[in-house]
Image (cartoon, rainbow, N blue to C red; front, side, top):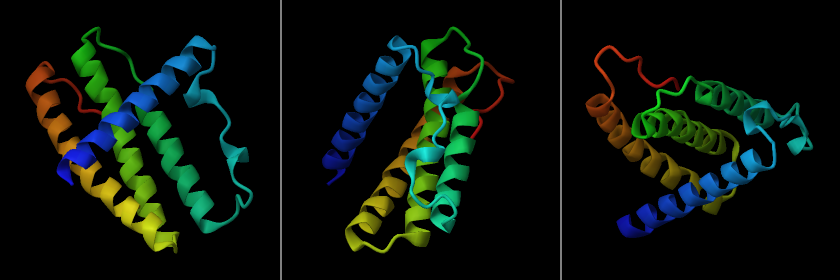
Amino acid sequence: MRNFSRGLSAALLLAGVAGAAAQTMSGHDHATMDHSAHGAAPDAPSSRAFAEVEAAMHSAMSRTYTGDADVDFLVGMLPHHQGAVNMAKVVLDYGKDPEVRRLAQAVIDAQTREIAEMDAMLERLAPSGAAPAPR
């Protein structure tokens, strides 16, 4: 199961990188896009919760780059992973489908482990006194 989780995480990461690259190349900035039209029930509690989580994630991902690819990658991925954890928590709060709820819990477990790994790497790589990644 661990290899499956790592493989799934890697596949999702690659898909996200490819999607981000495609958006960048096409002139779209995901952080500035209007995501409000994605749901049919914007006043539903779960829709409001998802919107808050996504807004916080996009805000935390906006940053000044350091020129260090390793540090910039970690600083960008930390809020992205935290956003995934927070979205999965919304599912646990509001979702009803057992399969989706199991997936949400698996996302929380995997992303939480990866956040801890990235925090440790960032602590090792970032210059002393560098601000921690926003989340």
